[in-house]
Length: 237
Image (cartoon, rainbow, N blue to C red; front, side, top):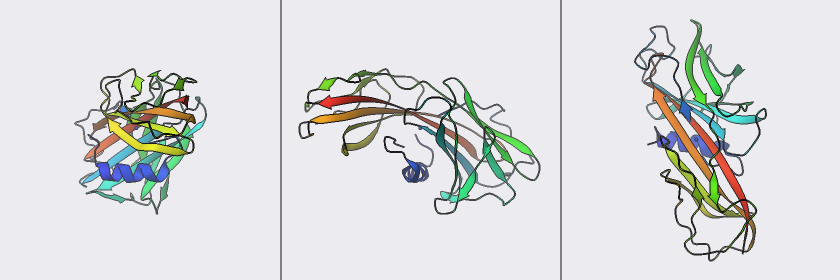
């Protein structure tokens, strides 16, 4: 389940790219049961929600969007003025309108990590590492194929265990046939009725969501989310 789904959904909706949906595997470097007495969140009912958005297919070395929300009882808040959040050395700015910290970082290759840290009045603290994963593999329809518009269409892809799930979508430029759906990571998407879809170029997309949570620095939880997407361009006929 998504932690604080309402907050994460609102955060994602604010910052999506054209092909993106709302997705992360965190590998904590510290004991999940440890709570540092000097941490900025000590004694406060706060949670940190990290999101790395790698939905749109880009090579390593380009900038991708990353956000951090600090949630206090369902309300996004700002940390103390002297506190700074970082991802692989890049400082985040607080967006007053969105109520989140956000920025762009250089995309790392599959298997590498995005390291998140917090600097407060005491020093620099580790928050979490987010592991970069391979993009989903769409087996059908394959990129460049002509696809008959049936009433029982499904996207077929290679499933993966241990994920939160996937989101699928079917599109025809410039419209979206059906809003994106959140589903279990089974290897087959929800069924779509394409009989009213216009002919011509379009695409299908799978976005996989990795997530892990641990507690540290006195925060109730530090939740890391990684969203990675794959698109197959097709021609509807």
